[in-house]
Length: 363
Image (cartoon, rainbow, N blue to C red):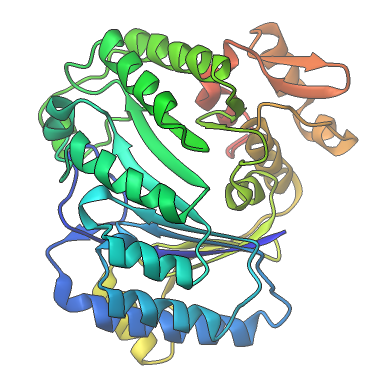
């Protein structure tokens, strides 16, 4: 499978935990950015003539921050180059997803909406700088269900002053709402974010209890824990993200967007103004590029496949390069073998980054 990712870097405000390539208060750059994005799509289409993506993911940032006219322009730009998508995901936040935008997105072919909630507790939403409250989310979610039958909702565990009971309440309330997909992330306090500057340190033990509780509650409610941070009802797994985790080809367009095409990994500049300026000159502002081969390519394939909890069947090349690492992880009981499949152990799910580091250079 092949996938297309479109990055929209604009937000109403920057959340306290956010380390993503997103920016607030630059409305004037939205249309110039979208024109640059259209030009990048045209240039990439000419370069990768055989690329035919089956999934489209529009993320950010906050894509729903775009106006109706800008959303139309964006999709016209995409459809001018690529069509026939099986899955089209559009990220949105409650404060910027209006009824008119829902109707337009449905008309434009979007069949999956990803809503950023993070918590059902208004105090926690305020602490992390979200621009909505829970009642606003509920109103928007109810409307969204009228137009879309594939909805993802995001939650975060380990927020400041969040108790285990608080977090479990959020999970339980989401279960009652019955979205088809729920993403549950443990909070990462990244350097430079307001949370980091405030001195907040996430309680890892408490966060783990939250994640363990979420897994139990969601599985009891019929959700499949198919990837470290993702749960879905049967047949509602994210096709676009599974393509990432199975080393499929994907093209990322927009500032900071990353791609993996023809075993070459590359990324655009994070700087929005630089991105626009380069595309005005018909140049794609690639700032990083490397061809994966040999041990590096195999190592990346392994760590990505470990994210999927069903496991994978290792081949001889994997053992040739990483026999010692596999043995060490077995000894630490971070990975297990079930019949012919390797996968993370129950313990390994909570130390996944330690597992992944074993397959990343320097070896």
